[in-house]
Length: 115
Length: 111
Image 1 (tube, helix red, strand yellow):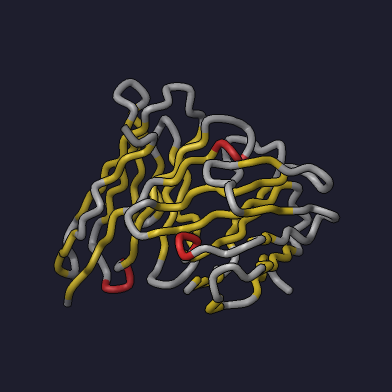
Image 2 (cartoon, each protein chain N blue to C red; image 1 turned 90 degrees about the horizontal axis):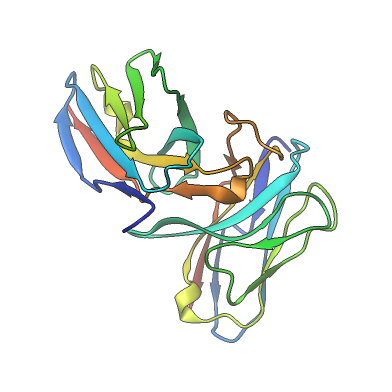
C-alpha cells in the first residue's frame, strides 16, 4: 500500500440500505477526513479525526458516522442511505497538529449512487 | 457568501497561452493557502502552496494578497496536460478540519 486506499471504487445502493466506505492510509498521519464532492459545491467535510480514538463533525455530518480504532483506518458508515447521499466520497489524511505548509493527501474516491 | 469563492469557468485557452485564476476568501484569520489540481474523475492533488512572498514552480506562479483576501494562480505557456480543475484551498488553523476548499475553476487547453 502506498498512500491512501479506498474501497469500493464505486457502488450502487438501494435507499434504506446500510453501507460502509473503507479508507486505509500507510503514511502514519494522525489526522484523517471524509469529504463528499458534488458538482458546483466543491469538497465538503463530513467527519474528521485528529488522532486515533477521537472524531469530530464537519460541515455535513447528518446521516453519516465514523470510527477511528487505529491510526490507519477510518471507515465511513451510512446507516440508512438516501438518494441525496449520491456523491463522490474522498478520504484524506494529514499530519496533526499541522504546520502552515502541511497539506492533505487524498484517496482515489468512491462513487456512490443511491437509488 | 461562500468562505472561498472561485470563478467556475470554464477557461478555454490555446496551447502556449498565459491564464490566471483568482480566488477570494472571507476569513481574515486564514493562515495557509494552497492550490490543488483535480483531473476528471480523480482525486485532488497538491499543486503548490501559496506564501505571502509569492512562489513560483516552473510555469506556475502563485500570489497571496492578505489585504484584499485573495490568492491567484498564473500558468504560463499552457500545455494540453494542464487541462484540469484547479481548487483554491484555505486553512484557518492548525488542523485540517479547518480547511475550506473552493468549488474549483475548470481549465481546457486546446491544441
